[in-house]
Image (cartoon, rainbow, N blue to C red):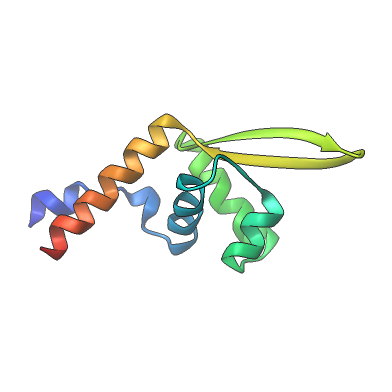
Length: 96
């Protein structure tokens, strides 16, 4: 049991970060507003969790402009995808 618990990634313990990664695993990328609407969180709350995932290098950030308006797109990095899959596998093992 202790070994399985060690396999859980603290980066995904929060439901917002878990939701962000879940959404990015099934989408090539999502912009800030799409994530905010999907998860039902505030700008500040989402921004802090995205920053945490970015620091862990689990997501990548791409900033551009659409009709002179800033647009920020987020994607799961390869490292993030692998870490998330490992986290989910550990949860599945705990449930067995």
